[in-house]
Amino acid sequence: MSINDPGLDDVKVYQESYQKFSSSLRTWLIGFGIGAPVLFSSQAAFSNLVLNKTDFNPILILYLVGVSVQIFATLLYKISMWYIMKGALQPQFKNKRRYKFSDWLSDQLFIEIAFDLISIILFLIATYKVLIIYSSC
Image (cartoon, rainbow, N blue to C red; front, side):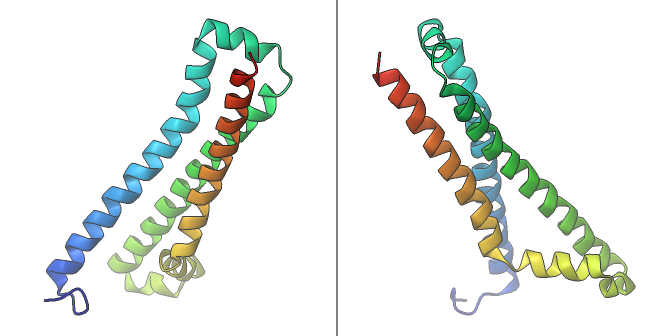
């Protein structure tokens, strides 16, 4: 079978690969969004420098919003997958708006990409601001 004509075994392999990459990225984004501020604030010299700057509150907000976007996306897709699973187990549930929305959402890759890009952009801006503060000392 070729990639243009995948069999069920191929689809399962592609799906498992997608799930691993998606899970890894989401874990990395949440870990970075929480870990970076902790790392920066755990360094005494840097912590004192940042505390004297008024720019640090917006930086923390950027990291927290980036993490919040990922948590929201995870919760949204978790609930949607539950509705899709329920529709597979109870075919009459497929008539519900919750199922139809979840089914539609699962086909919209651009929404998942948007959540990730929003977090990445917020983290890049926050990290850039931290580096600017750090380079000014």
